[in-house]
Length: 411
Ligand code: SF4
Ligand code: SF4
Image (cartoon, rainbow, N blue to C red; front, side):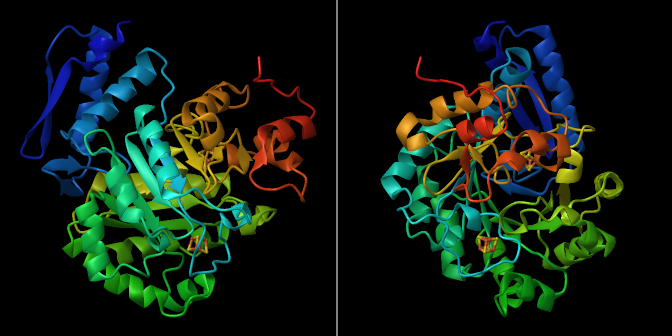
């Protein structure tokens, strides 16, 4: 199939409805696929607008913005010419943080050496976007503690990719939000761990944080940023009915989207297998998500749940398929929750490490579910990592510890 022909379309807006137009020769199958996809997007609730384009999720660039069209072309290339492109790249630009969460997943990654500097990050961002990324995600630590965050956000070519930030929300003053919007930030998720304010502050070991978040949501909205909450569910939190409580809080705060993550035993939760959601829990969360999707009540935020999206009923695992995570030192991993690195992007370049990751026998094929919640997959990978090994652990060390041949890239 001719890859150039996969670009021969345009998307337009008629009110809130996306219209698809063919602009040149295009493989019939590819155009039919796109028609179906656009019809699906039209069923989603509009959660906001960015540069006149319609957003249905912070994870997708809005349409018909050029970054949105680029995302569609990448999607076609993944399906029809089996291109392996990281649609999303999560960059941990700092591990500094003023909170001290009981469940912090990145504390294990902190090292004594200096994190990448701003010029190194800019080079990484350019390489990442050139590789096909349409959603550059800034995380930490706390990204707002990085002195050049706005410079990094503006370095992302807005015509090619949108930007998303995960934050603990404490430092979102009115002035800061305005600067983030001026730098071109598209959206942000503020972490919320517990529907009860005292519980949230206790888990984050930061008194007054919940109240500050609720105040700061308005600053972000007033600056024109799309703002949502990021939540995670353990088996117990799910049993406590937290998902619906978070949806009510989201409604009251007027946020656009809630992203639910499944708890994964990594970082400070390493080894705590009792936090995992059971298959029944995940099915219930899927049903709750679908209920909110079908009801599409405008006063509620859109709910995106990992239990649904990364399940066999939807898209499966994204790690090394269409996303990667990078530590503050440039080490590339399949995702934030996989403490395994395939190499350092400063030393080898983003493209080469992505190639190593996507050609490794355990990550080269689609995996129908969350790898880090699969006991079998963990047994072949993270369970072999010696306790005293630095994290993330190199794939060479993991392969050797698990008794597999170590791949030699020097030839
Ligand atoms: S706010 Fe984020 S980076 Fe900071 S301690 Fe909590 S989980 Fe870790
Ligand atoms: S292993 Fe896959 S599904 Fe699980 S958190 Fe990582 S990317 Fe997501």
